[in-house]
Length: 260
Image 1 (spheres, rainbow, N blue to C red):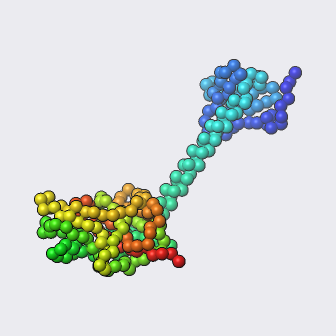
Image 2 (cartoon, rainbow, N blue to C red):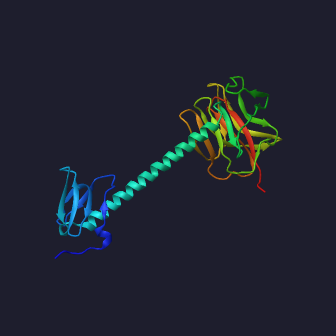
Image 3 (cartoon, rainbow, N blue to C red):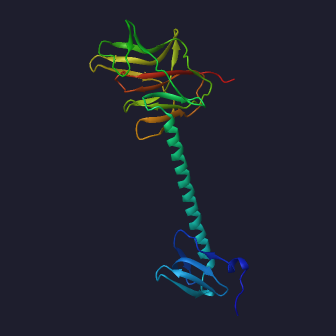
């Protein structure tokens, strides 16, 4: 007597699997097949081992286990394909993003329409005895001793953001440390960091208060995208690039104002 199966099973033909399939038998063994077709009383399959079509009685085949495992494998393939498509889309988006950024060292931000260049601030080293301008990318030298501060003139930056999660792009001039510093306002100036000058090593200990940021390298060179891990409180800030102990810090100042 021929066992009749539902129409959906009778029409089942697995012909588009990206990997080989294990056609399980009820005794626990299996045949490795490229595809198979369920007939009313038999299963027709293409044997990977013998590179030919063969048939086996349907009663000997464990269809439930075969279909379950094949479906699980296909689901994983679909998931992997989706992940790959998402990675490719993200990579394409990064390439489009990189093309918008100038190739010159500096700090940039997106105003929603175009990329804007941030102007570097002029830093002043202030000790009890003197004030000396800090030259960009040039250590200030061994002339200073004791303690001091690195300052920016004025209590407030001319660059003001209302978005406390502002994103920046930084193109480094060389491999150095960088981040977003929280500035202190005192006596009408903005203090970037406190300094201690070491007379023997000719170095400067820098006490810089930075906030936690995310950083994403956008290209194989020194181009990064940075943004705060938590919304920035209203106040004075700066994107900074520096080498510890060398006092060669570069500063791009900005302020975060309360949103309306």
